[in-house]
Image (tube, rainbow, N blue to C red; front, side, top):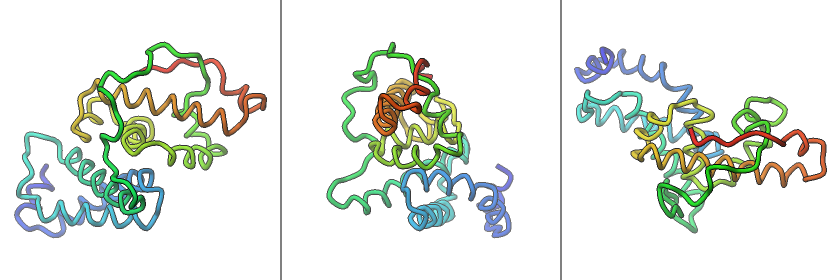
Length: 202
């Protein structure tokens, strides 16, 4: 907040420090959403530009990082919309309700998709699989299971309820499991490795 205050007073060096502090994480987020390095770079640059222009509008009763991540998510979704010119991209696409239609208890699988993501040999596979998710599911999964935001932080960034975040995260994990099992094949050794864990909506 001290840096933010300095930025509001026109301190360019303070803004540079803010950029350095958040640039890496914002780029990671944008790239996971857009799956395009150039679009991710543009989204982050445009997010910082928007922050610089609107910094005086920032309300200090909320976290600066939340505001910054929200702007970056929106810019990334705009880039994704341009990639998919035939349809509009929104974090609210095709969701019936916050409670979702999936049951809380599902068949056991292991390891979880979020655990798979941390295994270098499967990262490329999961990246391609993640790209197939609807943007609204993908953003929630990226924030919760890749960027390791809490449910509450994710809800604040996306301006959703915690219930909606849990429902979308559960759906994202289920769809990833289904796609990954299809990728490896039911009878393959890799598929056998994917059996017996529990989906939690947390």
